[in-house]
Image (cartoon, rainbow, N blue to C red; front, side, top):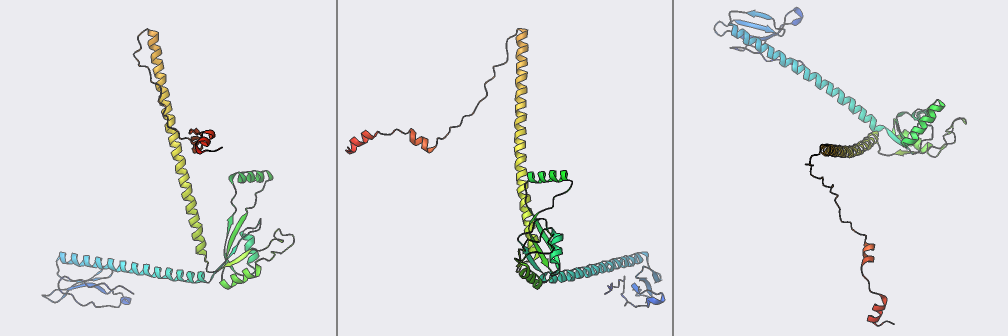
Length: 317
């Protein structure tokens, strides 16, 4: 859809007349008519060419040209907006198709991943039962000391240790295929070649109804945000402790330097034989806080009557 710019005129607006552009002519963009003579005074095409003119003031020509520039700019902006809308519609259609495809997909949960199995081997084993879209495996959590020891051992052997995984999720292209694979493989032996390290392992797979891959990514992002938040809190606490320690170190250094200067000054005055003008320094004040005794100790410290006195009062034998 081409934007039709309005016709600007100084005195009387004349209807726009179109000329076939294939013959080398351009449609008039702005036109004006002199009311006294009735002759066309100026016509400006969409390319800014002066097609016809008559005796007209320079101010009128300038105003007409400004109107042409304004209309030209408006038409360009309109074309840009149409292009943006066209691109947005294309993106919306593409996203809609992807959402429809995602609604048809099914996700299966693997509660145990055999040792030594990675996403490549898992895809190779399960892809023969159906089309697979995505796979996500959770690495096993190991301490930093174990990781360092494993790295040192692998360096000595000249090789690397395979990453171990605890659980995983597999996304199939269709829900029916995911259900069929889960019912077929759950509790069954992996099998394959007897030389394979996974031959005697069993599948632990379950179909997750009404579960989408977006739910998994949201959960992972949420856990990551919590982990980063905890890490930031720990780092801020460590920074506060460090700042407090450095502050106390600076204070102790300042006090020790003051004491050294005082001692040097006293020593110089003693050697010169003069009187000590420096007042004796007061001992540092150590604050003492009252300590509360435990309840058991307080009960023991209370005075108690002997059993003989109690027996005499209450008439016991």
